[in-house]
Image (cartoon, rainbow, N blue to C red; front, side, top):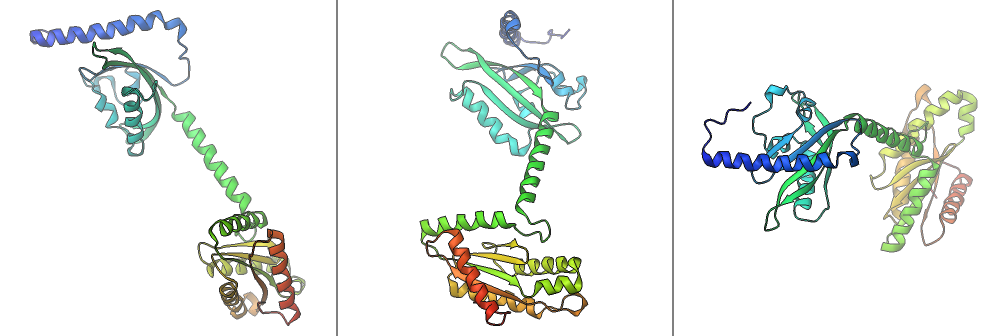
Length: 325
């Protein structure tokens, strides 16, 4: 039992008032206990915050779950005891959630946050509370709530989100060359077309095709052919801007979408890529060339735009290959 013998009269009165407020809340909660469903796993119990004295009363489980011993809990725990242990990325949103409720902008205080353990690691908590007592002039003076440890659930959720992100990335990338696949290329191209229409921007594409690639596969084998595709994809990607997108259009064909680029500029960049590949000595002292067809967007459909690039590519092949048309 706590020793109050050294308390002044004012301190005793303040303590009595504080206990009366707490007892009032506990009695009211007990009456409603059968109506409350708090059976979720991770339940760490109720908490009560006396705003007048800035005293928080709570189930010791909330602290023990953070790795502290019961005897390490201070005699008088303030609201700041918990907020000082919040993860830096969660502090503002937690404070805002409490302010919104205190100022009447939210019916309840409700938030998920990470709180630091005594080991330095963090646990996820779900916290929910409501103002239960007001002063005579209508100011909130007492809040009651309940807190749950949702670390396991949150970690599972974050792991699932990470897996979904990975799956999304894998679905947009060509499995061999590790650059964008056909579907992603078309989605990006059509998005750029909408942007070009809305903002009156130039847009161009190039369709590359490796010259005599069938001969490479027939003489060197498909493993060597795959190696060539990977190397060429890497070189194309190195030669373009971050705002542009290179992808494998299909087989030995590659496409580059040049944002905010007129046809003449696209031809210069495409020819630079062509020369770099033509100058490269591949494994087994082999050289490879590519031809390309460039065209600029002028309001046609994506398929019409690609068809025009394909016709220009055919013209480059007809004129002797290893050139850009």
